[in-house]
Length: 571
Ligand code: SF4
Image (cartoon, rainbow, N blue to C red; front, side):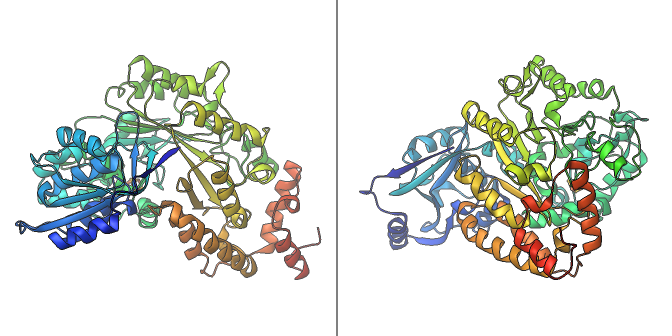
């Protein structure tokens, strides 16, 4: 998944180069670029603090690189980002020194000087000794860096108000201008984090919803920078995960080239054109799993379980979204940039294959295809996912996995073998190493103690990069919510997470994976109470239905403790 080189030991080290430069010049800043991702706004801001309208000719800004990213199309993506940022901030290359352990730094920069730099003068390059990591990445930094890159002219043409909304506002989000998500129950939202509904795709067309009163009001609220209640989870998560991906600020950067749509909003919040750049395709709730943290809205297999549990289940076992959804989306094929396939299980759904085949027919192989999958299906009948994706250059797989082997099956019951998941992952690594793969785990009271082991196990098996592991807390099921764990368990979770972070942090340079663990640690201090009656009632009911026993798979010592304290019945 990554190549590591060691540059010649006859070259000066990074430290030596810095000392040398300090003797010759006034070094105004030394920036370790390894601490940032290529398209990270924090790196942009870090470089930007050094901007001045006039430099002294002896001033130098020094940037160091020992890690970069590449993909089929682009080499040295960090290097590209840096040049893009320098263009954008308007710092002349003359005042910039880049010290890198990249053995190919000269060739790589040559390409950048010709294709990206807006300055006739190149930056000063210094080749240093030491290790160099060259990772495969789906970043296409010079196009996407903070949304600027080749789009810097767009930023330059913006008014101060527009720039403020885009770059500094704490609430503005571009999605209501470019995106629609349709849930399996037909509710339409701008994204998956939005807690509310802008309309019902079962009764209204997507075009009608695009300019209905709720969507118009949402746009007006965004323009006035009102804090939107339905977006509150996104605001919180954006802070925790540093707005890198999947949240408001990252969308603003990714879709900057469409900011004109925001400028062209009518006074009543409507838009003259209905043009989707991003959508999530959730044709229905078909799913083979009965995950404990899910509901029948999102898994057809949970319909009978919820009925057996005596819950009120609205609708049938298999919810069809609006049958002409695909037909409505087809109108947007020429301008779509990003499609997210979710379910249910998207790799079980005929409709998702139909959609990708349609994109193939229209030669839209550049579209970003993102799947949120349980990894138990590699295809549907003769249609194999890997065949389907063969022409697509930007495929992203988020695997919803919470534990391995029996524990995994306990949390996500269904008719499958754990090895199916591992084999699918290995197939991806062998056949499509360029596919961005990330595990997305839900931490509950059941698996919190085991999460670090699972994470490490997959990294050690070479199945995932340590940093591509996102942990989320479950909020909506109180008896499973980790914040309701008894104090004894919370202490153990803290201990294990802190230890895990010691291992993870050096492998997680952008802090995205660590941020999830830290967020959970922060929530453990609240006063939520463990309710043993509720916990055991819910667990035992489901264990009976699934014919399994919690004791077989989870935290024996905690259960023993609870039994000793008479918190649970002997089991
Ligand atoms: S602010 Fe967040 S929740 Fe609201 S629409 Fe944008 S991405 Fe979705």
